[in-house]
Amino acid sequence: KAAPIHERYEESFTIGAAVEPHQLEGTSGKMLKRHYNSIVAENVMKPINIQPEEGKFNFKEADKIVNFARKNNMDVRFHTLIWHSQVPEWFFLDKQGKEMVKETDPKKREQNKKLLLKRVETHVKTIVKRYKHDVKSWDVVNEVIDDYAPNSRGLRESAWYQITGTDYIKVAFETAKKFATKDAKLYINDYNTEVEKKRDFLYNLVKEQLKQGTPIDGVGHQAHIQLGWPTLKQMEDSFNLFTSLGLDNQVTELDVSLYGWPPRPAYPTYAQIPYEEFKKQAARYNDIFELYERLGDQISNVTFWGIADNHTWLDDRAREYNNGVGKDAPFVFNPDYKLKPAYWSIMD
Ligand code: G3I
Image 1 (tube, rainbow, N blue to C red):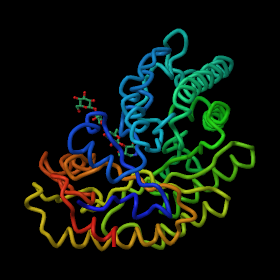
Image 2 (tube, rainbow, N blue to C red; image 1 turned 180 degrees about the vertical axis):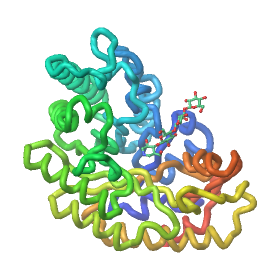
Image 3 (cartoon, protein in one colour; image 1 turned 60 degrees about the vertical axis):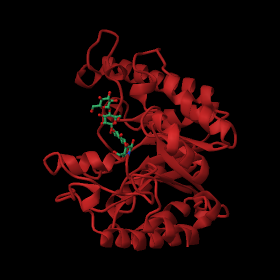
């Protein structure tokens, strides 16, 4: 039987996987119990699933994951309290059903802002109260930086931002802090945190928020990476930068795509992926886990955005750019949960 990944990294950080509730059963369930000591929901804890209508919370699917974690002694990462994507429309409609972003009257805009911040508070409070004894790490806000944003600070111009400025971030963190347990940690999560321009936008925002007293404990680095991108130096620089602010780092959505961006061309099927690619991937996994381990004091969790190559969001991307046929293979287990070269390289 293959040695558990989490035991290998026991001294450095916990090892997690993102899951859909159906993956708690069968072979994927067994893999979860054996190799990981932390778990996160791939989708079911996002705003659209958890509060689809105002005041109507749906915890059924989220509960399954939390109960599984409890039973198997795993940490839970919560993903995500606030996000611009997978968020229901009602958040941004005023009491008359008008889209808040279209409001031009300054007085009404002020009222809308208040209403939206109240909704943020209620959303965060209700969820945090329910899961506070289970969740160790909270993604409080996700992807609030957009390095292509028209403003000079790289703030994503989502509806949240257009209606409240950066106040939604502050209120979300403050509310989470108020209701979470003392030892829980609050994260600002984003992708491409290794890319200098985006990283610096994030750094400036976090620094400014910390100065205002916003209770941010750490940065979540999604780490949707590729065989040759970004560089190890970019990764290390980013961890160090946020550590210099006194913050923790977590690697929250790790996967190593075989492709560039966009993923074109992609191998049509798994069987067509040459073994050579898996060897390259293993070398890449070796390098990044060597880095993570070396920076073990600065990183408290490393989470894969899935378990095995039979279930990954990257397949949707590969198909999207290759006329519906394309397969990626980002993890250390193959579609049948067998060990890939990358497994051996991270265990070495
Ligand atoms: O649930 C419906 C199903 O009823 C329907 O039949 C089906 C048809 O397309 O769609 C299903 O919803 C999909 C959902 O995943 C659940 O499978 C959505 O279309 C699909 O867009 C959604 O994708 C998720 C994506 O976030 C949404 O933006 C991916 O699974 C999930 O891996 C991905 O995760 C994000 C992180 O939250 C944030 N960072 C980036 C990461 C990758 O995009």
